[in-house]
Amino acid sequence: MGLSPTDSADVFVVRRSAPLRGVITVPGAKNSVLKLMAASILAPGETVLSNVPAIADVPVMADILQGLGAEVTLDLDAGLCTIRFDDEPDWHAPADAVTRIRASISCLGPLVGRLRRCRIALPGGDNIGKRGIEMHLAGLEAMGASVIEHADGIEVRAEDLHGAQITLDFPSVGATENLVMAASVADGRTIIDNAAREPEIQDLCAFLVEMGARIEGIGDPRLEIEGVPELTAVSWRTCPDRIEAGTWAVAAALTHGDLLLEHVRPADLTMPLMKLRAAGAVVEEGADSLRIKAGDLEAVNFVTLPYPGFPTDMQPQFMVLLSQAQGTSMCTENVFESRFSFVEQFRKMGADIDIDGHHALIRGVAPLHGAVLDGLDVRAGAAGVLAGLVADGETIVRDVHHVDRGYGDFVPRLRSIGADVERVPASEVDLPAPDA
Ligand code: EPU
Image 1 (cartoon, rainbow, N blue to C red):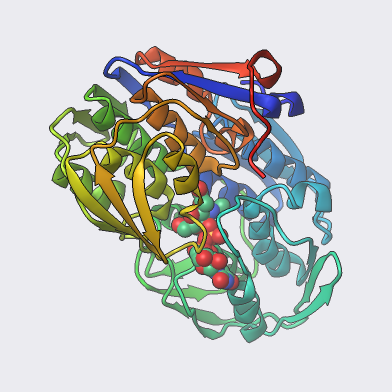
Image 2 (image 1 turned 45 degrees about the vertical axis):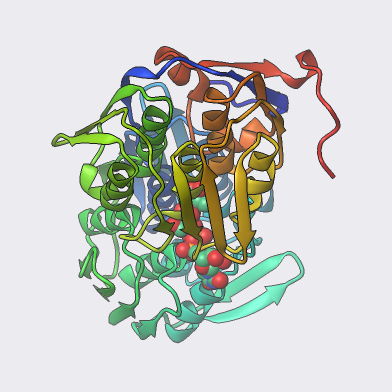
């Protein structure tokens, strides 16, 4: 897969396609592997991760770890990442790479845990709304850390990092992960109430336990962590990407196709599968597979919430699906303040969607036509591609570097199941100026 900077100037050209049919192998989860990589900071020696997805954020996280002193080997074709910390990591995270991905903030907890200090720039990531880190910092402060704000980031120091009772305002994924990682090597017992429970957090906790951490309540809203003096580097297989799987499932239902998804954990997708069935798709669950078949699509309401609620990361894709369902559906977005920004682009294709605050009314069936879509985030970019599969004419999705962050080899895999989509340099396509 090409990940050079010039690729970010590529566009996807999508045309109406026949029903998608075939088999898709789902890779490891983006939102797990990046945290597993960060957690490698906690232990000297060699961490070996398998089922690593071929997505653009992985080499960026590798750059961050290299900047901290690790030797990192990536073989994305084989899905392998090896991280070796022979010496103590640097406590300054390299700003260039850190500002490129949101997940870079996951280095904070491990650095404070292992070194009792960290200096890090504020992270980059998607344009889906304000993404504060005050819960991460308040938790570390409760554990004895002090935070100094600099013009270019933050410095966190904790001579005495100790266990604490922490109640999160909201079950934040990133805050839960950072606090669990720091608490794993703090002195004493930490209790995190209202902890996030996403499968990727469960994966991280299980990985930390394999490294020697003592964590109870994995998958529950209360996590109890008894700090240990040190952790040991281990080998680990990344859990499957439930959001990728969900995106393919929507693609099958939307195009009235028939897809077999392999290497998934259906239990991680309970709520999206429930909504897919309610919307008319036929879903067959295997032990580690899913088959999604066409059905007559009907309106359904859904509400995004922390896991086990409906994932915000599938909201734009589902919105596309429901635009093609009979009747009016309502979506309520509760996790990110600007995650309806996709709707403005989608309306250019003929989608009939009204927004009122964090509610969206989606009227179907809206005939869709091709348009040029831009300013999208990783999930909205994927949703734009899905919309193009059922639209008349040609849909151009710009800013495909966002999609590269979450979907490895997206175009070849789409083509393998019959999608009419190609990736071309933007210079080869006649494009209007991007929207202001
Ligand atoms: N929040 C705060 N303050 C904090 C922490 C969070 O206000 O200290 C707010 C955020 O601004 C946001 C909400 O809480 O509105 C949820 O944030 P959370 O911390 O749960 O999410 P995250 O760790 O920033 C991860 C995923 C996202 C996914 C969310 C929710 C990674 C790298 N990112 O983000 O993934 O949407 O959890 O499940 O793990 C994606 O993959 O497309 C993506 C955006």
